[in-house]
Length: 217
Image 1 (tube, rainbow, N blue to C red):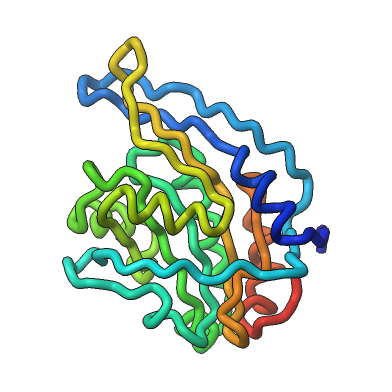
Image 2: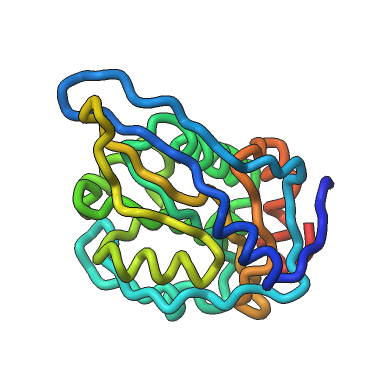
């Protein structure tokens, strides 16, 4: 497996500068803007020598109930991704890749693995909207929404930068957000492996069985 090891502090500084501009439509049927990424990472798995602490996030799930990320995923292999449902390509592709790879796991491992999608566009991504979108990807993925400032602060603790959605000159909604997937170990609850947006289905298929056990990919 392609991988490299980084000190978490150095990665935090680098990852915070890596943003992808995702465009949604303006509600008038206009075409989405093109995704532009500064991410040039060539490796699939980045193993951190000093894992990130799981963010202290209490948000709202797709059923409208409060969800304490640390408490609900404690001791369980967990993938966390920050994105939004109106993203035209990067977010749905990432979640689809994970969902497809997850299906290759044993039933027991599928039940153990927690995949968490935290919206970066809470104004539009209501619990209902998140639930509807995730049903088309994998209904077992946990969708979370809430106050933008809370979400932004939680993402920042893992070096993932997100910014409030804005409209460009053509009225299209644009969201800037980091596209990293963070894997948390069931042994330590630390975020010890990072994946970039170029990670493929095959990469996840190879790595998920090890991540479920808290092993290095």
